[in-house]
View: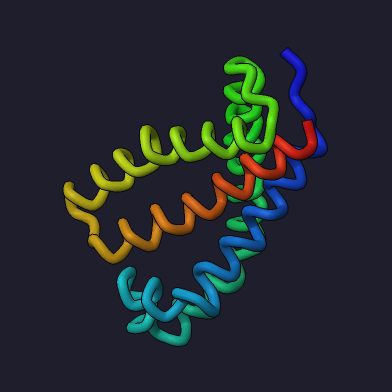
Length: 136
């Protein structure tokens, strides 16, 4: 089963860009408030900033794994067009991401985090579908 590694890497980079915009200028204040970061001490904020590089590295690795598996779905389902790959992304989002994040929210999370999470995931997965479909 052939997957396009360049498309996977482009998708991972795109997901980092989307995430930095989604959880930055668009909804950063809302996210920080929902997780309580707005109440952190300056020391705790400084400690978090020190560890951010490794957080980004691990997130990038997790994204590569996720998009590799997604690309295998696209190839395995023979959805090798842009529209097919984007539709596969939608179904993966609605069938896997939304229920998982809803469960997290229902069992002690916050609904604000649910909406922010599924929104960011939708944009990211649809962009990934576009990239993988276009580059295959």
